[in-house]
Image (cartoon, rainbow, N blue to C red):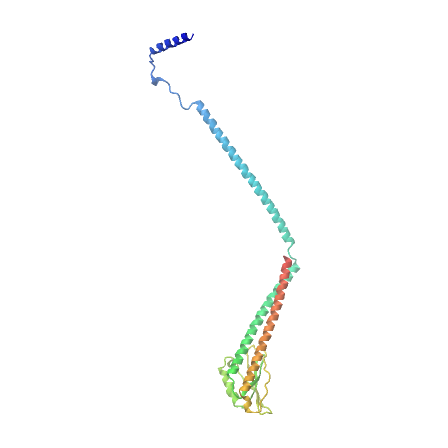
Length: 277
């Protein structure tokens, strides 16, 4: 049987060798590239891509929506906490009586600060005026004239003293014109008398600024003209220096008292503020 098939195949081969193809190649119809199968396959691929893209977008939207919900929940919690804090603040507001007390203390502190500054300013003015006055009197000192008291009565400055010779007083008063402090005052001799020790006692009166009361201790008189020498001048200057130091110490003590009062008022204010907190 195998032999029969092999012989048949040989016969067919020989027959084909004698066949002539008369059909031209250009007459064969061309097969189109874009056929139904390919179009259908392309549509399926595009639909699959669109479905995948839509699924991705929806997944992202769901993630964003969950984040938005979380943020909204956090915002709602914060708003609730803010409302609670606002209620607590309104509940802790100080009463009208406490506010009035705080305002009163603040006003008192301001007034004390103003008074303290004014006291310091006046103390500086007084010290400066005293220093200038005593300096000018020391410069204008003359032999035979010495002061026993300097007194400020309102707007008048009184100079009390002694002299061994009446002719020295006019010359001494004329020298006041060279003084920056005494030249602003017009002095008059309101008292001139001779005591039992043959010494002239005088009182000069003139206009003055705001210097307050300032007196010197009376100095013992000497029996002769030699007692009015440098020892009297030195003793007078020492007394003047002591009075200046006493006035400065008094001003310092007054400023310390005012400072203590101010600190006490500040402590009260701080205690009230701490209670409010």
